[in-house]
Image 1 (tube, rainbow, N blue to C red):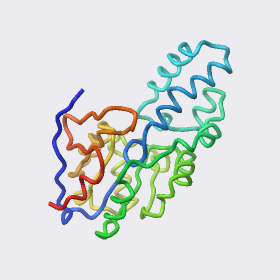
Image 2: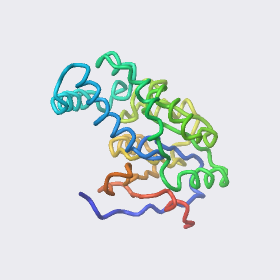
Image 3: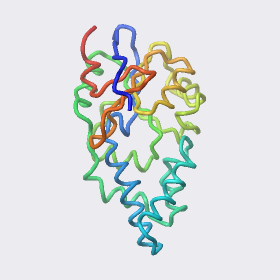
Length: 226
């Protein structure tokens, strides 16, 4: 576990565009962890008359095999694969969806500074709809882009190339915050200079700083004027 960190120092005069991930970055990943690692295995085990841990092991392997691809977050894909109504199951548990502390303050901060703010997520459009309806943060974004509409996941450099064309942004004046180091690495390879790792993606898990990227626990750290 990495407990040391490179702190984020942002000169806001160098930033025009703020790109923000959703799950684990703006929203507490506890919902997703609980849903996929506890609730889905429990329902799958019951439906298939399996022991919970056998179901868990099977599902973790199947999830892992699709990690970093569009299928990984595709609710329709997993509904078909598992024989479950995943979107309906998520909607029934929306009370667990929570915004991280200081996120709303940060979004207001970015708007006050006249920055373009985009939500850029690998989440499936059905997941996005549930979470935007629950959290009511949609109005803070100039646009929301799902990897499904881009055609590749954020872990692929091509995602950022297509995103630049779609949004007409200057990559050299962008800031990206994400809780996924593989995503930050692809954005770095593409040429986005300001990359921030969110070190506490879930309220139920410990802080783990990135060994490579400047890390924050809460977005209030980026509101400190430099």
